[in-house]
Image (spheres, rainbow, N blue to C red):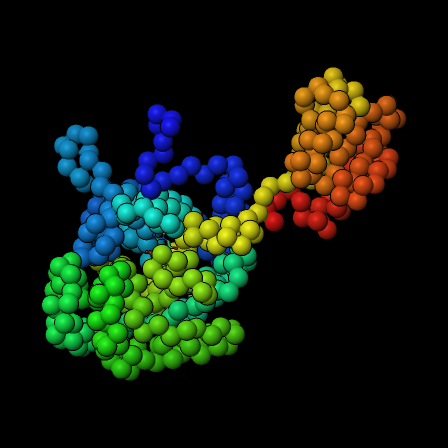
Length: 429
Ligand code: AMP
C-alpha cells in the first residue's frame, strides 16, 4: 500500500481516463459554441453565503455536503468549494452588471465541483460538470432549446437509450398551496419518517420528494403531486414547453415527483437517465428554471434556466458500454537505421506542425520492433524513413490494410489528411 493516496472520494484521472474526459470537454465546448454560449470561469471557491443563499440552507448540498474552507487568518469558515456552478455564475452576472448586455445571456462552463458526500459508485467528492445557463429569458421556448442541447450532448457523447424526465414545480403563486397539501399528507405519516426527514418536513418539505430514504419513499407513493396544483400561468408554460419539445421530436417522461435538489428552481425541472439505470445515483445530469435566484443576489428579478451534466457519470456510462474514446496517432515515424532518431524526430515534428497527430519511434531499436510499437499505439500508418529519403521520399505503410508504397515527403501531409478524414484517427472516437 503506497504511503499516500488520492483523498477518499477523489481519484486521479490518468491518461487513459483523460482521453474520455478531454473528448467530453471538447464536445461540450463545441456544442456550446454552436448554440451560442459564451465561456465563463468563476472561482472554484466562493463566499459560503453565495451557496447558502443561492442553493438554500435546508438542502443536502449546503447542510451536509459543502466543503467549507477555514481562512488561515481568522480560522472562520468564510469560503466553500463550489458544489455546483450556477450560484457562482449568477453571482458573477450580478457583480458584472450583465443585465446591461443584450438578453438573454448564454454562458457555459466545464470544470470540477466539490461535495462532501459519502463516496460510492458514481458519487465522488470531486466530480466534473458541463454546464450551461441562459439568463434573461422567461421561456418556454428557450427551456426546450436548453433541454434539446442537454439531450444532444449525451447522445453525441455516445450514451445510448437516454431518457428525459420532466416536471414543472410551479412558482411562488402556486407552489405554496401544493407544499401545504404535501405537508398535511406527510405530517399524517410523520411517525414513519426518520429524524432528518421529519426536520425537512418542517424546514423544506419539497426536499422530501427527492429523499434517498426508502421508508420516506414508500410514504411518498400516496402523496399528492404538483400537477393538479399548477396555476394557469405555470400550466401554460408547461404545456407550451411540451409542445415545443414535441416539435423537436422529444418525448419526455412525466416525472411528477422530480423536484431537483436545489431550492431556487421554479417551473421546469428535468433530469436525464440512461434507460434501465434509473435511481438516485444514475442521473447523467439535470437542470431547470431558476427564476428566483438572481434576485437573491440583489438584482432585479431575472428569469433563467440551465443544466449541469455529470461528466463522471457520462464517462461511466460510456465505459460500461466500452465506448470510451482513446487517442490514437494517425502516423508513427519509424526508420531502417535505428540510430537515425534525428531524422524520425524531424519528420514527426514537421507533420505535427502541419496538424497531423504523429509520433516518432525514438528508441534506437530495430525496424521490426519499431513497427510493433507503432501497431501497439493504434497508429493507422507507419512512415518508414530509409534510403529513399535522399530522393525526398519515404515508405508509407498502411498498418490496417497491410500495404506499402513510396510517397514524396512533400505529399505526405495531404496523403495522411485524406486517410484521417475517412478514419478519424488522432482524436477521440
Ligand atoms: P445536481 O446539481 O445534484 O443535480 O447534479 C447534476 C449532475 O451532476 C447529476 O445529475 C450527476 O450526474 C452529477 N453529480 C452530482 N453529484 C455528483 C457526485 N457527487 N459525483 C459525481 N457526479 C455527481
